[in-house]
Image (cartoon, rainbow, N blue to C red; front, top):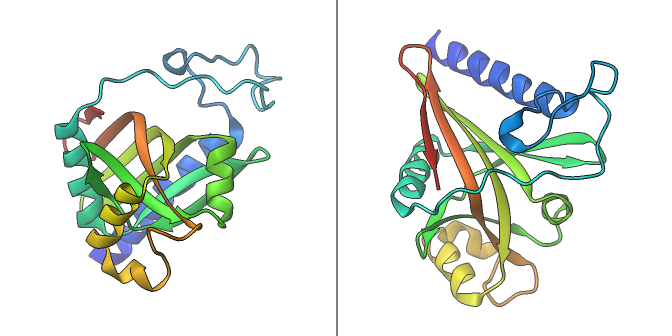
Length: 190
């Protein structure tokens, strides 16, 4: 019962994220956009508004990383041609005080991030869930890729810090909200 409730809650949460991304109606003044009317609410704008500028906080980045590591699998949402794209991810490592993830340059997810670096991440663990709004910034330095792969040796069969495919990305202007049904939400900026 507990497992099916967790799966149902995660599915409902992911559905809400997808609906919000697909509709474009989640716009509010905190990210610099507003829908002028219900008629144009779902029209895609040509501009991608900047996220709220946040102050880097290694401590907050580490707290978010601990949540993602405890979950194991989180979901990364990107956008392609107005269509939300969501897929599971598992890497989350701290390097030089920033929270990094990893993928391959040949994957569609990387191409989507290059086109629009604004992403959302969602995960559910026990009675809490996290939503992270951020920009993902590519870091092609060998030392950043090596750090990620050294901390995730199971990826070494597919990736190498010296290949032309491996890429790591760090979260910038990130706001994480940790919520539950039983306590107030917490917001962490990093």
